Amino acid sequence: MTSVETVRSRDRLLAAATTLFYERGFLATSVKEITQACGFTQGALYNHFPSKDELLYQLVLDIHAELERHTVQARSAAGDDPVDQYAALVAVHVAAHSLFRERSRVGNHEYRWLSGTHLRDVLASRRRLRDELADVLTAGQQAGVFDLVGRSAATTARAVLDMCGLISEWFRDDGEVTPTEMHRRYIELALRMAGGPSTPTTWPVLPDPPVLPKL
Amino acid sequence: MTSVETVRSRDRLLAAATTLFYERGFLATSVKEITQACGFTQGALYNHFPSKDELLYQLVLDIHAELERHTVQARSAAGDDPVDQYAALVAVHVAAHSLFRERSRVGNHEYRWLSGTHLRDVLASRRRLRDELADVLTAGQQAGVFDLVGRSAATTARAVLDMCGLISEWFRDDGEVTPTEMHRRYIELALRMAGGPSTPTTWPVLPDPPVLPKL
DNA sequence: CCTACCGATCGGTAGG
DNA sequence: CCTACCGATCGGTAGG
Image (tube, rainbow over all chains, first blue to last red):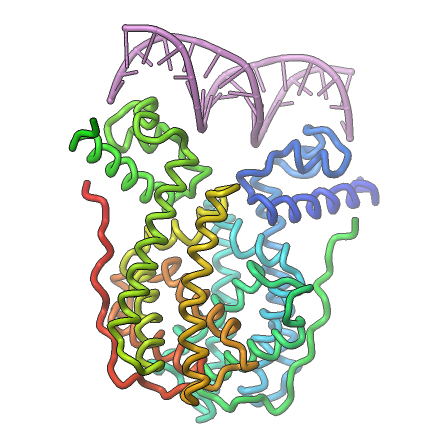
């Protein structure tokens, strides 16, 4: 029997771990800190996860799965134009890394501490995200709307994802630039990198917020 | 008295730490592993550094200082054209992160474990590196050769440095793309991002290799 | 979900 | 530069 309370405790542990991993990293965060943040003692974690590593895996996998869902959904909602599809995909990454910094940073960094099949699963998801972007770039090049550096979709996809992924490191909501303006600038940068038109036919709106664990 | 042997032991410890921090990160590397890699026992580290943290500080500061030296030198060697200066600065970063992945990755990631004045010193160096790039972008915009997204040198400088900094995460010498070709592609991407001409008047050559500690 | 505890490992030190 | 050792903390478990 898995009660509602059990699920809620599990989600609270994941939420506390997200914040702590974001602030200090996985290795510098102890099981005691995670459980105390939820008002539990250390041993309580093992009612929900077989190990600290397994908690990390389930958290990181969920972050990646959510990004994949948004990616697939945004692309199919963008219509047939490769430029619009590309802008929509970039928008998903910019939004995730500026609006949901904690989850994004944890997803982008802490998966390194995984190993074996757990690491492999996450790397596979990351590859699918890259391939999704590269596919759109290739389609745009074949349609003649993009002019890729080195005629290589892989290089541009990598560069764009790298530049978007690090937004979570420095972006602040209360900074000089609003999320909406940063969103616009990064889409424009990404379009320039692809050698496409300087604007999409329709600007993507900020996608729906990812579902966060309730506290 | 600081003998030649003492200096060499210190440099060997720094070199071993560089490789281990690159492979596993600062926190996951023990003092025992660093000293054993040099054929010493654990206590030997404290003949050269007051603490593990201080070793990290001296290593990370040296990595940043070296990058700053190359930056200043490359810019002054590039002549008066902002486009050439920009290409030269980007070239320094691409070269550092593709040819010297271990030092670059350690410099870009492990400084997070520093605190207090040590952290402040490194952040100041990183800011100078960003400002150097932003200055060139601003000069180019005022000269009418660049057209910056959001008319903001800061945004473009950040995006370019982020995209270059992550080259060390995935670039392999034995991959499909040679260092020279990757170098060229990233300079071209950076020029597109700045809204400049698609090529500099003179392509930067790969800069001199950084001085690595001798083993 | 808690209490009490395990062995292992950590960074650092004393004394030579 | 080594040997021997310190207290602290770690992830994880047994038993309730």
